[in-house]
Length: 85
Length: 296
Image (cartoon, rainbow over all chains, first blue to last red; front, side, top):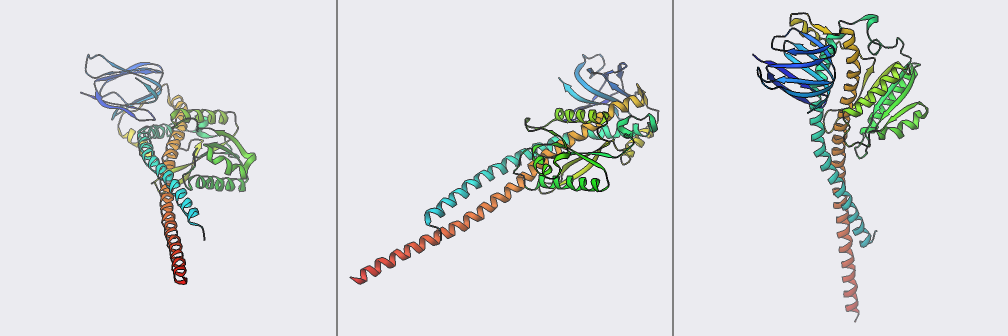
């Protein structure tokens, strides 16, 4: 049970790992992505991406600005122009 | 025939030039590795973005598409965004870029279009000014930052899109060097605005529908595409800046390697000449002494 998560910026591939769940700040509200999520595409507002490595674990947060999220059969890909932390 | 002292002076001067070119060559080699790594790290983002663009572009078509995508409807006014380096000592790199840009400008002017230049980097200014002084729209200076990054690409992209929305031009082309190897940097011309429909990357779009379920969009396709297009333009510019960086270091390395070798040859020739003159001087001196002794 793992979701493949990738966080990419123009400068580099920041993250590419298998996690339990990721909460993404979409323009129309936050959404959480687990494994097997339906194909989905959304712009995201500036905010924190929360990464839960395991169920119930304390989330790791990454600030993103200017982004875009895509959920496909390969997992979740977040494209962000800037990443902090 | 130059005097011994003069020759010695020349040898020393060529030697110090060689030291400089050698140092520059080593610096370029080290920087090249970094520039190449940076260009490689930028690739995943560009690829993903192109994939997403391709899958969206097929869905949004016709008049509802954003202006950046469908264009202004005319192609009268062209803008050439020429990316040159800020520093010299890199062989024919800048000359080649400028040559490609001028050829394109000539072709467009011959077809009766208006052409304007938007110059990025210092080294393209003088040669383009010589031929098209009245057509230069703007210089964008990247010389005050050490390694141009995404911030510069963002600034250029923003400026270009503003100009496009104000209707200052209809089509923008990007002229930049593509780094192939340390020996080859091919100047390339790509259409930047309107964003060309990504037909060649259509496979990315197909792969998504093969996945089965229909993709949900939030807010909707058009809104996403609208936000994506400026980002795509910026990514193109960023990639061009990275390619420029790698090309500059590669070209510089090759040029300086040649210069170092030439200096070496020159030193060898001069040293031989110096030794011969010295030998000749000694021989003459000996003959004089012997002749003097015989006369006694």
